[in-house]
Image (cartoon, rainbow, N blue to C red):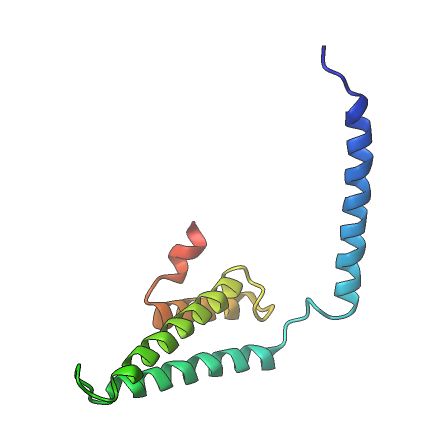
Length: 128
């Protein structure tokens, strides 16, 4: 025989938790946390472009294994990796249609950022 005594207590606990979460979400919504900022999106894209630019500049400096520039190649790899990670986060928001609030623009930006910045397919990502 299955006891339901604890079940009622858990249900009321989860109802209270759900209500608290909904209240918190509504307060964030009132404060504007879910409103997209095109200026912020532009900043994030420029940040990625700048990081790729710096990493490609560092990659283009001639360096061999005995060169003093060798640490710059390592730095270029690190910056490039961070830029690709930032592309991943940006395209993720675009794929969830939470980047600009404009569906077609979010999808287009996801495809461009993911395709150019990470060399992968935004369409494939959305189909998973």
